[in-house]
Length: 248
Image 1: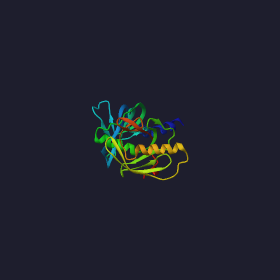
Image 2 (image 1 turned 90 degrees about the horizontal axis):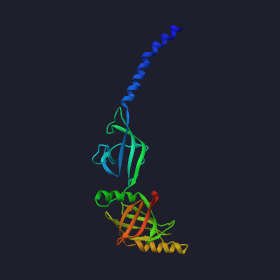
Image 3 (image 1 turned 180 degrees about the vertical axis):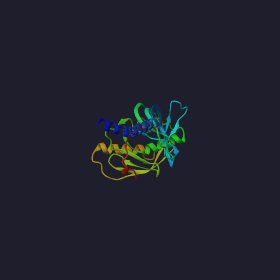
Image 4 (image 1 turned 90 degrees about the vertical axis):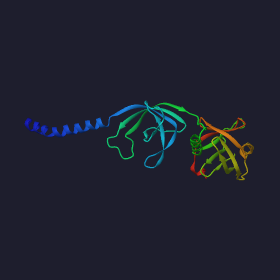
């Protein structure tokens, strides 16, 4: 009986050794290391299989920002924030065409820092306006008065140059023009529904007067869109998710 058992073991040994060898070889070829990665607060145009946008990153040895053609599993990137990440980097065994040599997996967000969007060059201006167009902007301050749960909001479509929203109880719509740091509201109109209370009437009147035919300088800071005249803030809007049905 023992002889038969030993015979079976001998027959299984070559296969088992080969399996272990392949497993060990696979482990060696897919060896992972842990690196620290900085991710910039804005993306940049890049070209892979087709034109696209890429994150900008710095490795430990980087002197400047580098295009990052891969993704990071488990990491949700939000423009406007600079990140320091601990990531697991694994080298691919068989690299597909036009793919990164490595795969990346998030271990930990070490630091997340809000960075104000600068408007001093064309690239930053395009980034800022793309950011504005991706959100709905709820009114939170008007003429130095905080607006609690205000129904007033604006949505900008930079492709058509149209703006729409609500001024208190009526829908508003029209066009706007923009530069790197200015917004001009043009040809604004509204529906004619009667407001049900004095508070809504007052908000609608003040909000409409504040923006109709006006030009503002602006900035984006801490998820707010701030509009200024003569260096003084006139309107402040808070960032909110954009319902695509609101973008006309």
